Length: 306
Image (cartoon, rainbow, N blue to C red):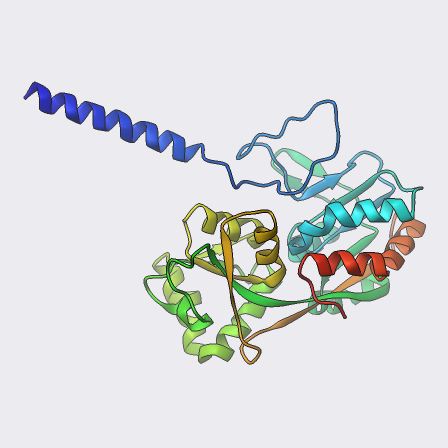
C-alpha cells in the first residue's frame, strides 16, 4: 500500500511539473521580428511582447498602418526606406488586422493592454475591398503587392490534409480567421464555396464552430501559426506569404497548395491619408512602396508582384 501511494505521489509530481513546463513553453512565441536596439530590453514571452507595434512611438516622423499579414516585411522594408530617405529616423508601424486599424482611424485611438495610442496614420494599407470602402480617406492609392491562399499545417502534415475540403472533416481542428474581425475570413469563405459549395462553408463555419473543432481567431497572422506550432490546431487557411515566412525562420511548418480553381487572390493597396500628419513623409513612403527596392523585399517574403 505504501509503495502504491509513493508511486501515485511521484506520478502526480511528474504530471504537475510537466503541466508547468507546457504552460511556460514559449519557444514559438512572437515577436518574430528583430526588435530595435536599446540599452534596456524587456520583452517577456507570453506576457509583455507587443509584436504588432514597431519602432518609435514618441514623436514619429512617419506612421504607417499595415495590413497585419505583412508583419514579416517590416524589418527589411523600414531599413531600406531609411537608407533611401535618411531624413526619417523615427518611424512607427502597426500590423494589426486591417478592420481593427480602420476602427482605430475612425475612433482616433486604440487601447492594447493598458497602453492607449492616439497617433494618426500617414499611410494605411489593406486589401482592395477595404481600400475601396474607405476611398474618401485618401488622396492617393497604389497597388504594391498580391497574394494567394495556402493551407498551413505542422511539419510532416500529421493529419494528412490534402485540400480545402479536408478542413470539413470532424477529426480536424481548424484555425480560421473570424470574418467579423479580419477581411481574409470573408475571402476564405469564398474559397470554401469554390471547393465544396455552401455545404462546406456551413460545416466549417457553423457546425465545427459549435463543436469547437473550428477556432475563430481575432488576429490570424499570430494565432494560426502559434496554434499549429503548439499543436492546438491541425491546419489553418492563411495567405501563402505567412507559411513562407514561418518556414524562413525555421519553424516546423509546411503548406498545402490550393489549386487555382479554388484559390482566392488578394491585392494590397496603400492609401495616403488626406489628413496625414506628415504629408511629405507619406508621399515619400508611397513612392518607396512601389519602388524596385520595396518590390524586391515583398518578393523575398513570398508575395506576388503586380
